[in-house]
Length: 190
Image (cartoon, rainbow, N blue to C red; front, side):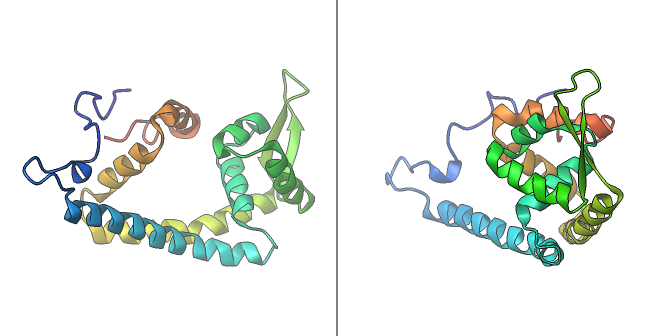
């Protein structure tokens, strides 16, 4: 895998945050533009999660349940330890959510083949059906946004989102992606 951004080309701080040598003032238009992007991200996230939130409410579930269900469905056999690492939550938080998903028949736990102490997670038929129902409106929203944004939007959006992830997590994310689709999505965004 090739690195998509060379560390030599990466600015030490945002161009919008740099001061003008002549005036010593921050570029307020640039800062305003960045704040606007942050706000757009808040609004986009609000709407991106609204459809699944409505569906989850039917089951008494919330966004934590959605995240667990998504990753377990996407990566069957995921270890509990790996899920903790992906979600960056405490064992106690995961235990509560996982218990509810197991008790409701959405997820099942199986011991590992080589290490019986390991807990491997799988969605049940019911869990897969819910995971698919949750992702459908999100995929439709993204497809619509990409179509409205032009030809290069998929590539640029993917690169932007990838680069928003902490660089210390890039390798772990790519490793996770490679578990299911090494030929396309497992590549670093170009």
